[in-house]
Image (cartoon, rainbow, N blue to C red):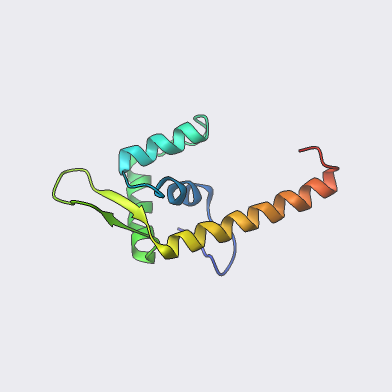
Length: 107
């Protein structure tokens, strides 16, 4: 995964995964959240999603949540993950502000 809070932008998929996990969700619920919030523009396959979840867990941005004995593992964003999401939101807000000024406030 090419995400780096220090270096700049998160991928769109990573940002949506982090946003989805502000409340605990299992993998399939994360996939549904992303598809719904993007109007179907982004639809993740299971392999892509679970690879991303593993990577985010290794970074300390998400962690398992609740009882992990069942078949469906739930995940929740961590404090580090929230910091990454907040930095990405600020970066995107700056981008929109600059673009709006150049385009003439068309947004």
